[in-house]
Image (cartoon, rainbow, N blue to C red):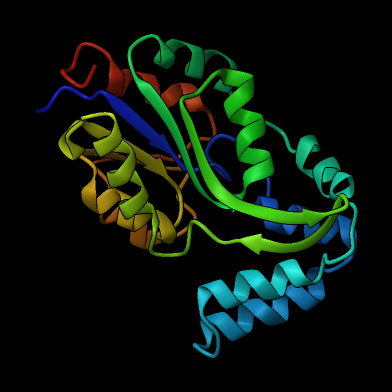
Length: 214
């Protein structure tokens, strides 16, 4: 068992509770039904993930970025995060890798003084949404984790990954230790070393103490 030095977290459903940053904004702005059509196109193989993101962000063109921030800042933090992240920060580098929105990822990173937050960034002009910089696609989390590990001279075997959905599987495939946290997709369970079925982030702490992963 390698000594873990870095822990990578998914954001939506792991560090924050709710239906996901994209959906929270769609719900708030009344664009959910149109976004569902884009999702159906993606899962039917008619558009790529990047096209899906661009089409979704296109529904918000001309919207003041502050209107985007409002529902994102109202999303509840995951139960137990207030004590869990400060405790882990004592011994590990902490990273957020999310297919959600950078606004929310930065908010959590800054609140808990985490090391990195990588997500998808809305572009603005004059304070209004005008596009998206797509950084984390459906298959991209593993590569991003690898890049962050290399920058910090950390072997991937010394990285842990915590996620809840199938887009976390690429990250699970490269990390040395993995936890499926309140999994939303059964496929991710096959790639997890441990599974937690309770929405309480404190439940991950026993895996990062004297059992050799600390």
